[in-house]
Image 1 (cartoon, rainbow, N blue to C red):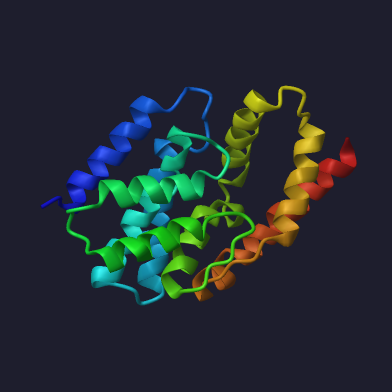
Image 2 (cartoon, rainbow, N blue to C red):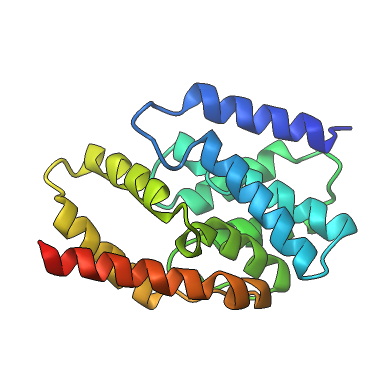
Length: 195
């Protein structure tokens, strides 16, 4: 029977060894961060026990689809998780829940359950943090690989549009991340006006 530690080491090791170097955002570091945030948000939302385990596993697998393709990577990640987790510590119903959480990270996010809301918020939690610029810069560098003509000005326009249309789904993130997200949005707007 696979333990959580076994699953964690396997997924992180694969992310570290199998992703190309140009994936500077959707990598093992991002996955570890999202899993930590998912665990933290889950605890603030009074989710624990078996559900907390499912949240952590979903966060671990949420970007594994990048092994295969950037497009539709959430569905691919669900396929990978479903295959990997057969005969694991999860039953088929729990694997289905994990897939729901992975799929809930697809933008525009449309999570429908409490657990899906937690993983969706964990994935974009950085928008409402003081680490926003560092994360944003890594994502810009990653996008440059497939779009080498992308300028910083265009990137800031994309970010303003994206952040303006984003909403957090959990009470915790609405209360504690939204205000910082609005400050970050204002900062990007000012930068855009200065070009």
